[in-house]
Length: 478
Image (cartoon, rainbow, N blue to C red; front, side, top):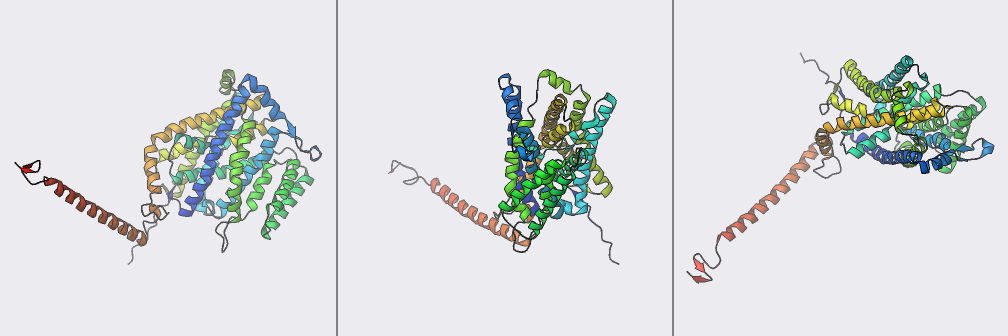
């Protein structure tokens, strides 16, 4: 009687496949550069808005209006940054989400369970923390969604600055988590921050999206077709009352992200490769420049920890995000009977969860939407987002540094390519051809060492004989 087959336990945060690892590395490289620019823009905004001699200039530039008034688009620079440039950011987010759904981790329900549950818990717990603090402290419940979003670019910039060699599995999990996080943030913006609906404009935007989809399916190519159409869709969405960035997400989701015969990359991947630098390097930093310029005087920072709305944002980011993501990951492991990758431990998940407490771009946007009309409270909530993000970054830095030696060893193992074929050795260890290549490589090295040993032995033998004969002095017999 044959022995019953046993299924090996499923591993969470295990090694990525080689194609997925390559995609994640490319995406994170761009996001990291964008994150550094984002940090620079945020610091510039804070300095610009807080130096007395420059403060007026910041307000003048932010409030400067431009755009065609006949189309109802004579908007301030800050408004263009929030509604216009962020549409590019959400367009890339839509492509990322589509790719994850059809070609990435989210296409497999079992694999998707971890980032989805972790992201949901990582949004629900901060919202609960905010709500409890404001319900008991008599604050406004309007800002419950502010601490729910993670800023992947800011988080990766922190990793780049502190030099932590986070394993690719944790980086990929952070990226996928942020994609799901962005999806739910988009839904929150669309559902909870739409006060009025202009059905005619919304119908026009939907019609434009249908045309966009049909052109894609017909294989029509050319930026001169899609860019004007995208601008029309964005304009109609803006006037519909639904936040204009939703247009970017919708168009991103329509792109095909699977490859066909003869294609090395899907259209979605190609366009994402072109647009991501624009998003990470221009759109998001400019939004940060005109959104992060808030007062950071001692009194203002003190108010962050005394007012329920701002305290709820800080604790939501620092405590809510960490507890939510860590708890969601633990619950997924508990109820799916999966276990962590043998290379990682639960403190690693906790450290990564604390890093996800960095909420910047979308948190600032939701803060503006939640407290629209109350300039003072809007600025205080922005200051709370900055404060909470900095605290989360400091905590994550300490926790990650404690494990950095371990991460460095894992990273070096992932990168090692001794046979120099362009593929990390860790992905070829089950292939006989790899071991044959390594055997030939070691045989060549062994032959080189034998030749070197022979030369050294001959040199040593030669130096053992005194020139001119034993016992001779100055070439004459002693």
